[in-house]
Every structure is written in structure tokens, then in C-alpha cells.
Length: 120
Image (tube, rainbow, N blue to C red; front, top):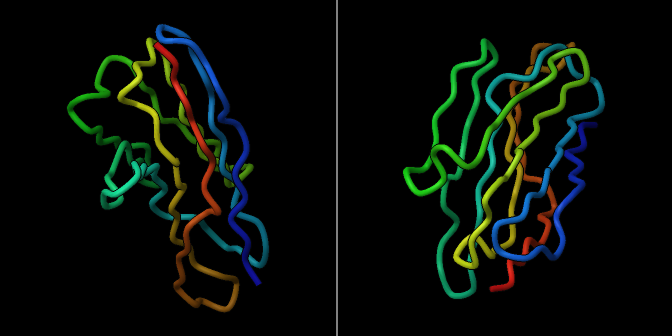
């Protein structure tokens, strides 16, 4: 069984910083793509940043230069460093990952989500 666990988030003033973490645990041979998505009330879930197993990254235009995605393959963990936060970054942030188990099964799942609130 595989679990996707998130930590981080909270309340911060505009201009502040937060760091999100997401760890995939279980019967894992390798974690492939990892990413962060966010969902604001009444809207669909949007990609914020993604990172491939080899470290290739992709960012939503509005977070470029402010957010940095990184990963530690030894820990099956992805991070999202968020700097210069704005009130419009307020959302529930979800981690997404896909993996291959030791039995060769390909799977993927979402984390439970974490609230990020940026006050003006």
C-alpha cells in the first residue's frame, strides 16, 4: 500500500514565505513525476509546479520567480518553497505523484491537501 502525506502550509502575511512537503511512502521502487496543484473555492484544481524524476521542472506563469519546486529522490519527497506570497495564492494545495511499486505496478494518487492563506 502506498501513502501520499503532506505537511506545511498555514497562515502568512503577504510577502512572506511558506514551505510545503510531500512524501510518498510504501512499497515503492521509484517515484516518477511529482507536482503541486491548488484549488481555490469554486474553481477547478490548477497546476502550480511539476518536477520529473530527472529534475525537469514546469511552473504556472503566475508563480515563476517566486515558487521553487524540488525533490529528494532518496526520501521520495517533493518540496514547494513559496516566497513573496500574495493574497491570490490563497488556496488548498495538493501534492500529486505517480510511482512504480516493487511489483512493477504503476500507480498515482493525490495528497490530502493543505490550506495556504495569505493575508493582505
